[in-house]
Image 1 (cartoon, one colour):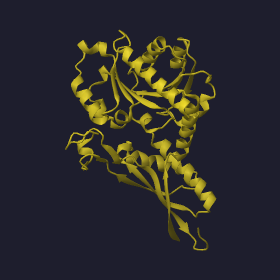
Image 2 (cartoon, one colour):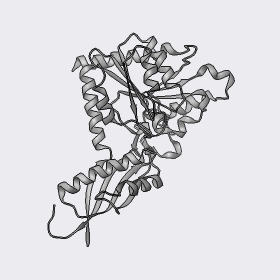
Image 3 (cartoon, one colour):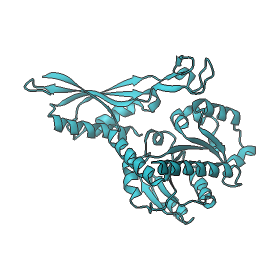
Image 4 (cartoon, helix red, strand yellow):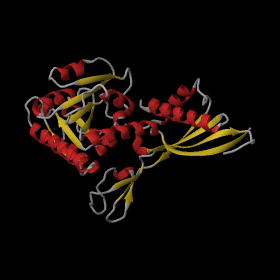
Length: 224
Length: 120
């Protein structure tokens, strides 16, 4: 039988991008900042979040993404912050349609900031727009200084790159000059932060960035 | 392994189009995939074949067109690719370079069986 070619020219993730836009519109109207934390398993995302929530004088909520268990959501709830766990049951990333339905379970009124802690992975979560204002790339000192160039998409699109566990520097062979050179090359205008959730080093700059982003979001909402 | 999510989205979209537009059997699907997209071709092929089973796209061929990375400098106008991966111009040092190609992840086209009776 004859064949005919039909042009489609449509984004593969068109349906999910629709959800991301819906989320972005809703959060813009409410002036709520949404930050999507992406990093490897064990990079210190949850610990950074715990310290962040303890230090921020803002009304926050957290969406936790993990393959299995609600352990992270329980850790966050212990800080007094509302948290909803999404289990992907094997899936390596979160998608906007799940965030859309999860937002209904969070108390949005009066909220300043929603954190999404994505599934631990430097590859797949970088591909998916969740309607966030910023993706934040989190990598820890023990993972090695070669991560930015090995995972260029995440490091190039992140609004900020946070190097965690910097208190381990005396014990680990980590070329920090190379690391930041590569980050700067991929993402010249992204914010660059080094923190230790254990000693508190650098936390004030991270918190300041979150306050600045929140203020900008609220100003934009008022300007509408 | 986000390839399974991607092919599922492709199949959902194309099944909708197929019903709406009364397509014949889909024989080939062509995707344009930017080199920045971290898609592994072999995994994508496997995911597509597996996910198509039991759908109206079963048996369709998948063609992946790789779109190389192109980054352009707005100041000196020069362009480069993966060999100088980064947004700082290797020629003039400007740090406002933009990726103009390589982020594609699009359904380009399909080929369907055509009985020649009607169209569009």
